[in-house]
Amino acid sequence: MSYNTIAINQRMDRFNSHASVWLFGYGSLIYKADFPFLERRPASIGGWTRRFWQGSHDHRGTESAPGRVVTLVPDADAVCHGMAYLVTPEEFAHLDHREKNGYLRLATTIRFEDGSSAEGLVYIATHENAAFLGPASEQAIARQIAESRGPSGPNSEYLLELAKALRELGKDDPHVFEIERHLIELAAA
Image 1 (cartoon, rainbow, N blue to C red):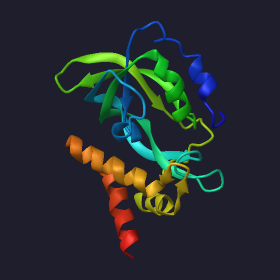
Image 2: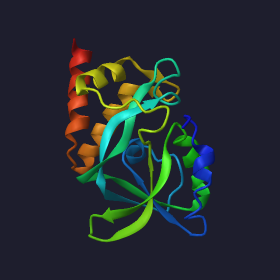
Image 3: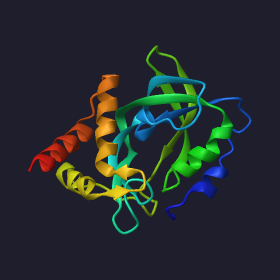
């Protein structure tokens, strides 16, 4: 699969007839909602874990020096915490462009902190997309993040903002926080 997934995502019309749809964000969507929304609530999805395994050629890196951003990988026992936004289907065009570097829309059950749930969607970059970088040690990921910069700014900003947003939600993410620790050590060295 190529980097650009806009056309594939436009074919997913499952929610097009809905007046509004819940969107689950687990990376920059937690702290950077650059689209109108009707409601915003802390939420989670089950069966997935957040990993800095996706390359960013368009936002936090370049074609020749991709940054690293998060995607979700299957993990039956995991719960991934983030933020859910109630949006109108008109926002899909913007979101498909924002998430075009390998991310696909998937339907999922979103759980809210009050115990309620709703069907919604999430963008996930699977291992089959051309921008997928895959696993590496947290230290190696931190080094790549420290060296990467793209049109949306330094890759380190993405990591630090995500870690801050997770702390503000009161959620622990050992993978993110370990990469953050290594990045801070690199900056101090």
